[in-house]
Image (cartoon, rainbow, N blue to C red; front, side, top):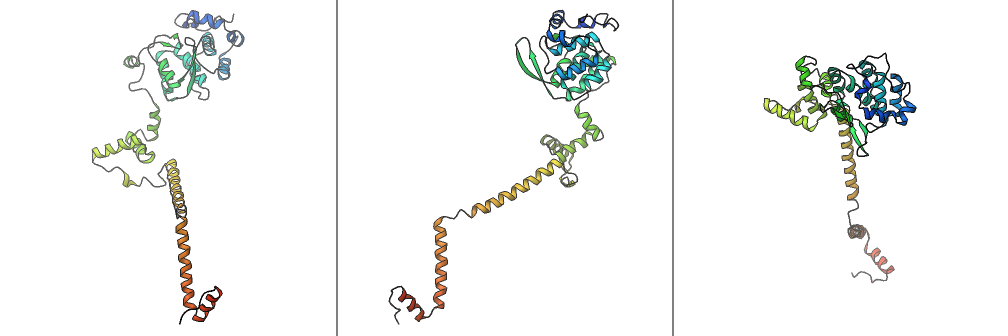
Length: 311
């Protein structure tokens, strides 16, 4: 039957893996149309394909997400296979969410922490359907991982197996000492695991405000210079985004200067323009006065109907 767990798989804690999901939840999934039409006789590869093409949200009852999660419990693949095929791939976020849910349900506590903690750096959005309030909401992947690792043992309205605290596993020797790995670890490795070198890079090359302030405070505390004299503005050391930003600012400055000169040409009033033309005409006439003789002036005045100049 489609609802019966394969008899050849290993039991989980001496029980059917499907029993990890509550009885009422299982019955609602068994009665759903998606389970009856799409989830018959699926293998792990088929579940992976269905999750990549069908999943568009998580949560709710009875959603495709919970139906495929129940099918994984029925097939019960190895934890390493799910981690490699579902969690470590980065293209399909709902496939990753499904794999995390299965590992949280069936994995050992050390495997759960080691597989899920690196996903705190994933900030993609997940659509969540709440069956209780009948509303949609948005949940980021790192929030989803945090809820899976929460000892409250409840997510999406489902009760999860108990998960010991991380510190308890460290004291028992199941996990390495120290904080959980974060996205900062990769950035520190790129700078030789030297936090001072990474802080200097953030302050002098990327020039972020917080890093710049922390770097200046450190240099002032040690009585050193802030590093402005180290030619951090050289084109070889400058970040490409910073170089492009500086280039754009220079172009904008030149354009504003041109616009200012262009606008100044139209600030003169019409009276000032006429006055300038009048002065130019007077200067021209004055020059002509010097050039004309008395006879020429009398001839010009006669043309205008004026009396000749007095001698």
